[in-house]
Length: 380
Image (cartoon, rainbow, N blue to C red; front, side):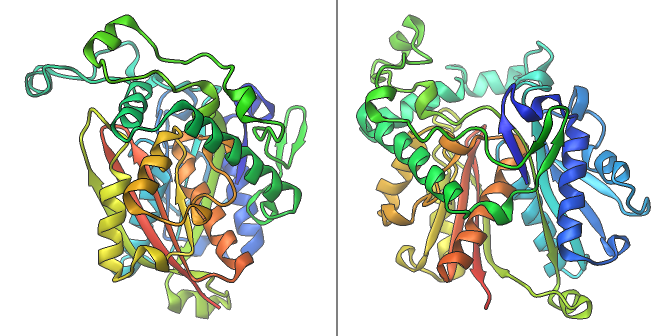
C-alpha cells in the first residue's frame, strides 16, 4: 500500500497511477501470471472527477496488465475496501473465482470528501418523512457517541496520543515495512508514512479547538459536551491498498504460501443518527459466527474514525485494550476512505505474523450507521 497526508507527497499523483503502482508492487511480490486473476474489486468512496471511471480498470490497464482481466468498484463508504475483500473471499468460497485482487483507493487531496454530491441534496422526501429530525455529520455523531458512553475529552486525547506513539514505534522498528510499497511521486519516492507525529502529547492535544461546535446543534442535542477535535479524529489522507486472495487449490498450483484464512464475515447497520456504533453489533455477530469469544482474539483493528469509536467499542466488548489497534490507527496513520479497510487488513495480518498470534478481528464504522467485521486466522 501507499499512504500520505493530504496535500503531501501523494497529492500530485493521479489516483489511477497511485493504484497502478500499488497493483504492480503486489504482483511483483508474488510472482505469478497476472492473466490468471479472475477479477479486481476496488473500493472507492468519491467516484467522481479523477476517480470517476472504474478506477480499478484504469489502474490495471495503466500497469500494462492483461486487458481481459475485469474490474469493478465497490462503495460502502469507509468500509469500501473491506467490503471488496469480503466480496472477493465470498466469491472464492462460492467457487466463482480462483484468484482475486481486492482493495481500495482514495485521493482525498484530488477528490475531496463530499465531491460526489456535487452540491445536491442526497435525501429524498420519503427519507425525510421517516427521519424528520434530519441527519447529522459524522463529527456530530462522534460527539453523540462520546456523550452516550460518557467519554470525556481527556480520554479521547490520551487515546489519540497513544495512536501516534504506537504508530511511531511500529514505523521505527520496521513493523510497517512489509505492508508499504514505495510510490513514485513528482517530488521523488515516498516510502514512509507522512502522517505520524511522534511528539504528540495529551497536553498538546488539549490545546486544540473543538471542530464541530454550533449553537444550533447544541440546542438540539444538549447532552453533547464538545470534545471532538482534529487531533482526536482520523486524518484526511491519500492512499491505496490491495490484497491478493485465492483458493487453496490455486495457491497450491502456483506454489504460493497462504498467510491466513478467512474465518467469518459480518455486515450490519445500526442507528443512522449515531452512525458510528455498528462495529459493536458487527463484532458480536462475527464472533458468534466464528464460534469464538473476545478473549480468543489476539489482534483487533477498529478503525479510528474518531477516538470515541474504538473507546465505545472497547467498553461494550470489554476487550483487552492492549490488543486494540496495537500499532496505532487512523488518528496517526490517516484514513484514505476507500482504501482503509484493506490497510487495516494488512496491518492486522502483519501484526499476527510478527507476534506469532492466531486470530485477528477487523471492523470499521461506515456512514449511514453501517459496519463490516472480519475474522482471519494466521496460518503457519
